[in-house]
Image (cartoon, rainbow, N blue to C red; front, side, top):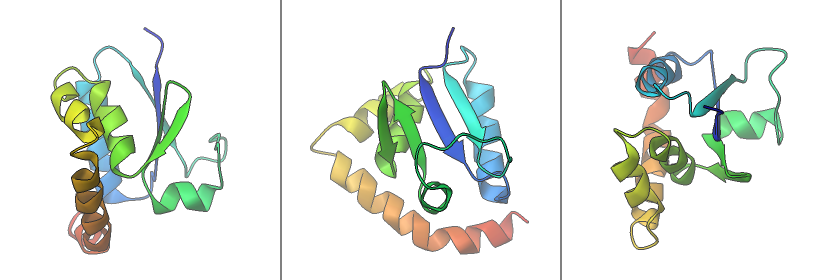
Length: 115
């Protein structure tokens, strides 16, 4: 199967490494193309710094960020698809984005735990 979702991630982030490793294991169909932004040959659709500041994914030609990007990644994995559908449902999408923004504030502390 050809990947229909592209995910850009920070390969130098210990937390990101663990999460992407889990997503790769769950993505048995190969529906996601994972791009490590720390590799010199990584292709970037926008500024690399912007991609490193927030989680980004491309689904069906649309560039998404934050909770919407997580939703796209989850929809590509059958086990997580229900969460991805909820994240993309307009009444709940703002709540997922609020949770993602809160996570961004905790991320530096969480990264220290995984080093």
